[in-house]
Length: 388
Image: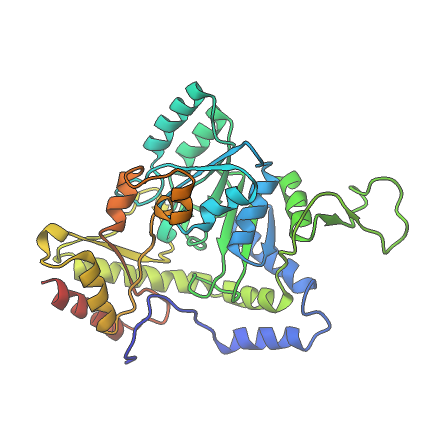
């Protein structure tokens, strides 16, 4: 048994290693065919028409916002219960960022709150151009309701599905973009599949796809369909807009293709471990993660909330004693609006009370493919000893 149990970690097997070595021995270690294979494999798995792989999920969010036309004077709304990248991507575009408080049961953006805020914003003449619902821990937001509001109020929807590859909503894979314009995945090592670092944008709209491709590579195209005037020759390219070097490598893409082949296995194991947590923690003074009946979570995270009125210790004390006991718990997330940078933009404590209450009670327990039942038992026993 390991002495320290992390909250998450990658699982790399020999096939993954062989796939990477094969690329390293090839002629193309970047800008080669492995990238397109990875994109097509993920798009096919999710049932989306197009996919664009990039260097990180942050890069994916950035170019998705730019492809949506987000710019200076526009507004982006997202959940305060997320990593800062979900909001920062709007600031990168010069937009105004605002938040919609969370549903206290799912910990995702509250669609009821969104509906109320949209009605207010319409009266004020400040409707958002983009809304980014975040699928926290692998559970989808209520995307059908959000899509109806998008149609009614005229905003675009970018799913932050960084946690959620392998999950489902209304019996469709997350990433199908059935109720959104674009969806973004992350392939960081603690995510469900990994490319080391890496991300991807999926969409069903060809115009967005073409723009995402250009934005990934400096705004440059070689596609004759978009060349202005006559081509100078087979070497010719044009920069049509200000883009970025957000490319992923073939080394990473090869790892991604290999990992994707095990995605269902990874998710099945995570669901088994989550169900086991549910069974073995149910009698403790905890709020266990609730699942919306329309969703099938991929369980990137298993988040508990402490019932602090029944525990004779503070949130911080429980967290630190778990760490001291060799349990690598974490906290997802510190509400974005409470960060000093966002406080300087005008946000204050108390602005989004549901997200703040969640933060003061939440702890992410270890959950990953190779977590053994023995180590999971250690997590549960240690937690029980600390809070009882």
